[in-house]
Length: 79
Image (cartoon, rainbow, N blue to C red):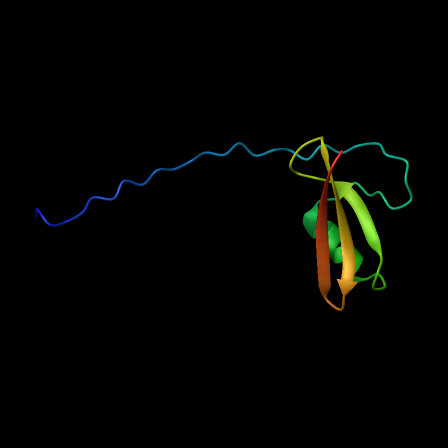
């Protein structure tokens, strides 16, 4: 049919960055991923935080912060 449109589907393959675990000597630093840090911090009092590696690469860290009841904020930091 002449009136039908053809939709070309482009599939982008994005390389997955592997989280680089580091040896950092700080009491709030933990080598954990996003899900594990969210679960960990929900069990802590409001205001507590954990510093963890970022999946964006070795130049980044993330602070996972227990902001409010059942509210967790992630703050990306470029080192």
